[in-house]
Amino acid sequence: MNFKNVAIESLAYALPDEVWTSADVEAKLAPVYERLHLPEGRLELMTGIKERRFFPAGSRASEASALAGEAVLNKSAFDRSEIDLLIHSAVCRDRLEPATAAYVHGLLGLPGKTQIFDVSNACLGFLNAMVIAASMIESGQIERALIVSGENGRPLVEHTLQQLLNPELTRQSIKPYFANLTIGAGAVGAVLCRKDLAPKSCPLMTAAVVETDSSANQLCQGDSAGDALEMLTDSEELLVAGIGVASRAWTRFVAATGWTAETPDRVITHQVGKAHSRELFKALGLDLTKDYTTFETLGNVGSVSCPITLARAIEDGAFVAGQKAALLGIGSGLSSLMMAVEWPKHD
Image 1: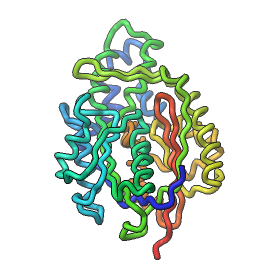
Image 2 (image 1 turned 120 degrees about the horizontal axis):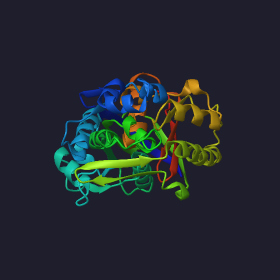
Image 3 (image 1 turned 90 degrees about the horizontal axis):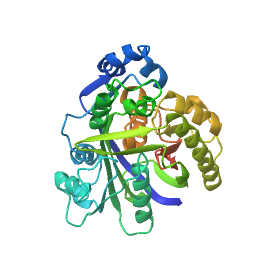
Image 4 (image 1 turned 30 degrees about the vertical axis):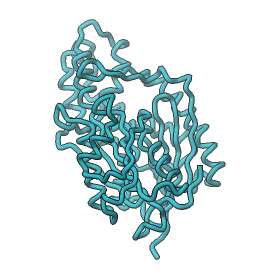
């Protein structure tokens, strides 16, 4: 997939106020740690995650997405009346029907002409939505798109904490729950537009590739559990399978873009933890100093992770005009989407 006319006109995000440190999470599991003789600090040591944030109990995905949507519309040079397409791309949704995008549309006061739908693909949803919107812009169907995602891992983490207090669990049987404790919350939004409509120098989407390995679709599975959420993950096997699918995606990416491992000035990945980042960069032959991370303070925020990390890299001056960035997404299922983003220098 190659794009010649698609700009990322604006990026913005919204973060919850409530912070849970990894020490706070472990404190809630004190009886488990004592019974199984687990060392304190294990969670942060293994993942590199110091803290994560959560929206208040009962918060809806649409409300989180609307916060990010409002933030990015405030940054955009376009009026909300000009938005042709709205995609809500989170794992979290308000309900099965209608599309969560319908609620976001109402909260943002978007016009009747705006086409709406949801895109859900685990942690890849936002990147998938970018590709869909870019394709529609490239083909001339639309001129401007708003993509939002609001993830709140609080129900999952709280339910997991309750499950882990089961006195029958062993060191071995708690492993599938461990990845849940890395999950956080946040929201992100992006306005994409036809390149010639962008009023300033903007990052451009130039290419994207995908690689899927559905034989690994059982390695991370989540579902509703009443009002809560639950997820089981084979973290070790998922890491191996994830590196494998990413390596094959990188081969496609290099062929599609003509880039090498040395080409990108900045690399933005899905934010799982330090072990995943280290192994991914090693497998692809990338320079780890080009990595920009947010997992240390945000944890794994699902579909929000990759785009919010890009937004913060721009905010921090870690990705600037004149540079190229590789966005490397991986989502359970198992699938990888890699995207080339090039930012022309200012005129």
